[in-house]
Length: 249
Image (cartoon, rainbow, N blue to C red):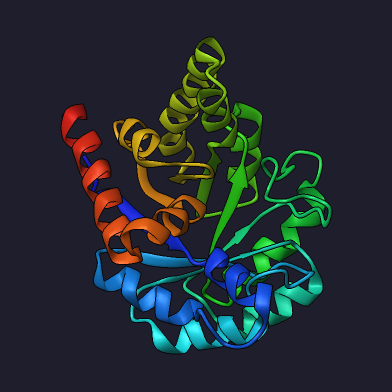
């Protein structure tokens, strides 16, 4: 079974900074702390409205961290230009709606196929690994493979939300979709990641799916850091993931 990596999203460190202005807390410092505590990479979403991460944050993250930087972005020409200047290890194309509090679902890779194709191609030519944040469906997986993306990140939000609401039957259904989708990735030549809404319990559960090689987690870890510190929240997440992986063997 492949090693399971942890990508830590530092967006909401920037959210706290921006609430008051100024330079603190610094998402770059958070990224370095997370890496020291066991993170395998750092994720940051440069939104078009710059509600948290800013352009300079992306440049500073790329310069400061030794681990891979995953640049989440909408498929727009402006974001493509920034990504090509920053040259992160990976770019994850995500849907973006300015009225949403957080990403509400997977990228429409079927209906938006023709729009996405040149972005995937251009990033790939620059040597940047392209990931697509998608719903766990066969149609989305097939479209991602046809776009020649290297990676898909399965949207775990619907599953996590169902569990948070106590909707066990719905949660079982959504986890079944994730299990089936993850099992299909290898035959399509796609590396499988997952993320959105994960906490210690759900990360432990989904870690049992052997095809998933990376979890990207942010909001929960930053929230836990208020109580136990960021390094400890990252260490506890790694322990939960490793426990889930061991149970699957």
